[in-house]
Length: 330
Ligand code: UDP
Ligand code: MG
Image 1: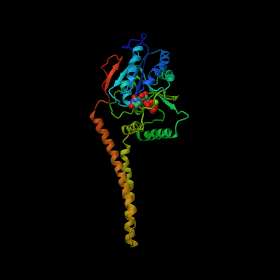
Image 2: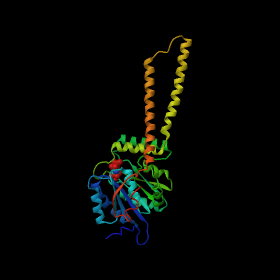
Image 3: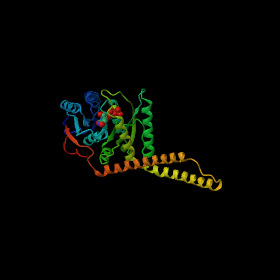
Image 4: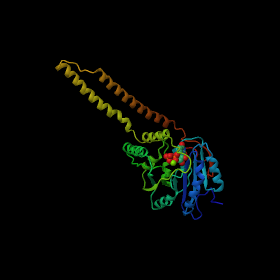
């Protein structure tokens, strides 16, 4: 009843749009999201597809995607072989998108579908990347706001890539930019940094964040810390220089203390007191040394992961794709 799934081109050759949605245990959200997207997408003079990327869900997410595809062939699915993480699920979906413009958004309805026409308008006026920025809901916790502001501030400082708090993976990419991004083979994937890094004509659209429709956040604290750390290590080596600065400062201080000890011994004929303070300073410096060693280890580990060149994710199954074997492996 719908478009031929093998052709995203509309009969009149108008532009094509892909919506890419990573989903991990989002069974309760997909049908509602489809219902919200349908009128918005139908109002655009474009042919479109919705690609759900199932990140190894344990609930009925994949069944739901298959059911939606049966109803509407423009709904398609990529199913990863296990839970690889949001960034990889997003990448898998993007790799299968056929649109001239591709919008990525979350599955939980926190990203409002009704700003899609605005994103398209910006794209039509020549922007190749249309970012979105979340306006914080009035009830956001100060801790969440401050930690997010602090992270993006540190990230921008360390990487030289400007990022603002509230810019998540809800954005439009032009086909040209997407093709460039698909060439990035790094394992430590931090798409929101990469999208800033690549440049091109860009703009930002703001939106009011909605409540999650059903279920709970799939970003555990552990996943969030890992994500933030990947962001920093994949974009900056400045933390590695920390040792040089700290080493220089402590050497200068230690040298001054040494001169002071010799001076006291020679000219006042008394020895500098304080084993306890000496010991605590040494222990403190040892602590710093181990932290720096750990930091070094993190970067070495990251190199090991990168040189292994394993595929970043494995695709188990596809639904509704034109060439079902083409881009499964990245
Ligand atoms: N997600 C995913 N794999 C994961 C974690 C999350 O595909 O391992 C998806 C999730 O289904 C959602 C999006 O990433 O569509 C954002 O996750 P979530 O809404 O839980 O994050 P939050 O909005 O709480 O930061
Ligand atoms: Mg969410």
